[in-house]
Image 1 (cartoon, rainbow over the protein chains, first blue to last red):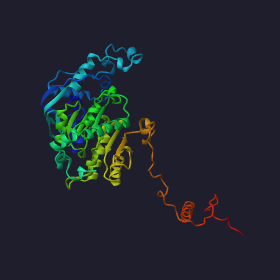
Image 2 (cartoon, each protein chain N blue to C red):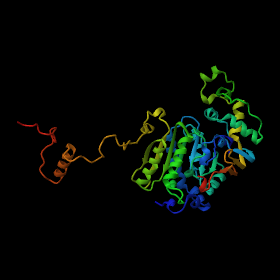
Image 3 (cartoon, rainbow over the protein chains, first blue to last red):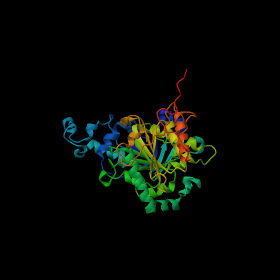
Image 4 (cartoon, chains in turn green, blue):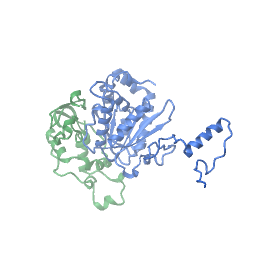
Length: 144
Length: 280
């Protein structure tokens, strides 16, 4: 499971939904894997405003990955040679080259995957098992 | 048409044998691909987006979402997250090494994502399974409303969802679309080849009007071969097709009937059905 998905997953239990600590889910005993993928710059730009940067930093720290910068990158940071004059005029999306920041972000969000381990809700402590990269979000009847 | 949902719950029906059969059948592959393309047309994405695939199964639809624009996916390649209740189906998907993320989850238990996560959601041949409840603790209506409420929350404003499903009858069609409307979606049903054996029903949902000027019919604007049928009841009008006895419509209908029976009927004019002026 990609870290991007983990940045959007919350606890599935109804009583946790209203509680702020149900997001993010904390990875435990996680085995990581890198799955190579092509950099998709328009997608990164699209998803950037929706990321919860603080939570992403927490998750990276818990996984023992290198620290992320304290502030999220801006859309112009993602384009190499990102002068404002360049990006607004004359260049279509296809011509823009991803910068090192974009490549790093892509590495963290889309290539780093949790293969085995557990996701723990910060509110109720429910553990969601992850096996072969698939998290089990099925709940027993009394918790729905 | 066989209805597996009448026989067994989805996690038991799609065991290893059934999942493999379903995934390797070239007929099912073709139909699923057609329906996925149709759903993508209805969603109308303009940039690579984050998409939710509800009931992704073995990810026949997900493979299409990962394709680039040159391979026929509008604005692709998209990044997607799929969930399904059948572990065997997901196992088949893992073997195929699909690019999206997979979750084992029951749509009837909700959608475990934070608000405003996805640009769009698609679902191919899945939500008819929500019309069944396996235990006495839950009901189809409860499962549907939990699913649609949480789906509504997890889509961003201006997002769209296109859910293809096989309704058993008109009641089921109504139950599903009413649940979606109750959750806050703008909803419309699109039917391909209605009345034939290969009829496909798509439930098109919008979150917030966006550029659609508040009407779901804006989704199909500019599409070829789509007829718009208005079935919403207008406030204050009578039930469709029933005229009050003695009204002009009623009189005209009676005259039609009598004419059809071969009787001699006076010609209709603008005075038909009008009151006579009071004479002194």
